[in-house]
Structure formats: C-alpha cells, structure tokens
Length: 239
Image (cartoon, rainbow, N blue to C red):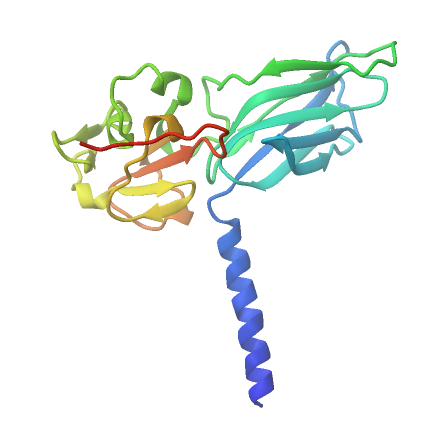
C-alpha cells in the first residue's frame, strides 16, 4: 500500500512540475510561402536558436503552417531551410511570456547550390495579431531612448498607468498599487522588481482583459521580459 502511495505521489509531482514548466513561455507561429508565387510550402524546416544553441524545431504542414511552443521569453533567431530555396535567418525575433508571436516567412528560389544565408531583422508589428488583452508593449529600442532606469518607470509611460513619485508601485486605471502584479519572464515576483535597464528586453503592460492564466485581479499586469544570456557583465547600483 505504501509503495502505491509513493508511486501516486511521484506521478502527481511530475504532473505538477510539467504544468509549471509550461507557464511563462511563448510561441512562434506563422506560414512559410514562396516569395514569387505566394503559395504555401509544406515540409519546410523551421529552427529556432538562442545564443547559438537550437531551442526549437518544426516542419510546416500541407498548408505551410508551423508552430514552435514552450519558448522562454527573450530574443531568438529563426532559420528556415528548404531544398531549392535560399536559406533565410530572421534575427531578433521577440518572444514574450504567454504571448503569440506571429512570424510569416517567405523563401526565394535558388538555382545555385551555394551555402548562402539571407539574414534579416525582425520588426515588431504595429498590430498585435494575438489580440485579447488591452494595454501596450515597450520594446528594447524604445527603452534605450528613455531616461528612466527602472521597469516601473518604463511601464508608467503607458497610458492609464500612474507611478507615484519615489515609489515602485503602479496604479493602473485608478486601482490600488497592491492590485497590480509584476511578472519577470513569466514568474510572479513579490517586493522589489528592480532590474538594470540593460537587462530588460521588453515591458508589457496589461490594463484590461487579463488572460485567465494570470488569475483574477482588479488591477493590471506588468510583465517584464529580460534579454537572456549575455557575454557582458553589468553592475546595477541603486543609490
């Protein structure tokens, strides 16, 4: 009887671990098409890299669609390979926690069998295809131009968000500061959410229509995505 209970406990523990491992991750999906004919391309290899290491892999279906899930928040490179076409690599693809990144890809035919890779850079779309929650995102490019050094200060630039002077607390649409929750790479944090400006990839503020995975709350969500591994070491001093 004791062995059966231990086995049941182990199964439950693994199940819970699996559920928690899936939270706070993002997804890249899209369609691969021929650049000239605009026809969908099936059986195309789509690979995702981060820091030189492969993090995900998918093959397009008959409609040219692909999806790569369970990606940790951060910046990725997406590479597409297909016989008879030039290999392309999209750098700087941003993945946010619990969000869908839509990335359509086009391939050009290649008559020469050369090991050539066409490299382009990802641009954040003006309209979020994921829809749903209301709010705004502040990308790394915008953050680099801001005088503020804290995530709270960055989030306060979004409409409907108020940051009391000398405090990290945020009031979203008039709610109390304690009703606004901070998440860093999909993990809820308590207390200070201070991060060096150089470590922040994106700050996403959800002011309404909060997704069910965040739970029930009366305020809003400040979701911070970090830049991930870096070869440089930065020191953050708070005076």
